[in-house]
Image 1 (tube, rainbow, N blue to C red):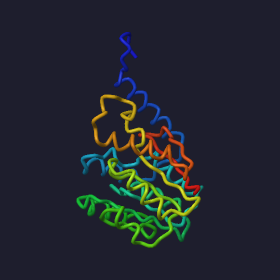
Image 2 (cartoon, rainbow, N blue to C red; image 1 turned 30 degrees about the vertical axis):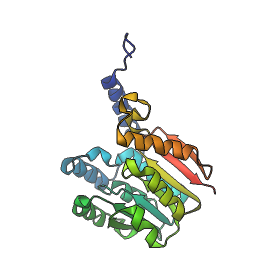
Image 3 (cartoon, rainbow, N blue to C red; image 1 turned 60 degrees about the vertical axis):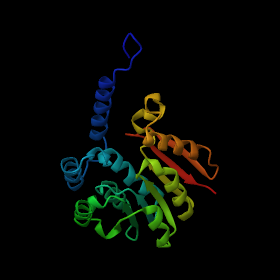
Image 4 (cartoon, one colour; image 1 turned 90 degrees about the horizontal axis):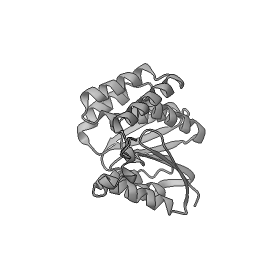
Length: 225
């Protein structure tokens, strides 16, 4: 913060990058395959930063190992990084059912999922998860929400209907680059969607919840009712 009380955004971004680099050096290394996937995502897609990346991918893998879900629902596959990371934490009989609404990502994502060493644990579909996931007739143990921020509440409520009691929902981007507390984004529809979602979950007595300040914010939500 300078003498005028203004936040030095470039300086904060530099510190964040340094911290992320430090963390990356002190956790399990990223696999060569995921490294190549992340690099290809940034080269061949417009929004490469949307991919989970090394730190979050490792966290997702470890959370799966701790929760031990048999069936995971993912809303928002993007390039497949998070689906592959979660699948690596599954037991042999576990599955990730992942949905991507953007059909332009299908060829890229399917190639990388099919080429991974956990392809047999991932069921990848193109379409609206809010419509398609309930039709699977599966009781899910865990859900990872990383789709359209404007419909997070709708996706959350859908997931709650097919999530077993004691199951977990992880919701990504719930701090939204700090926009959730920045008045400059009061009219931004994605920011409004995240704010409304956070308020909705905070008031929901069916769940226990915490927001982790990891990357763009990750909400960890447990269904207790």
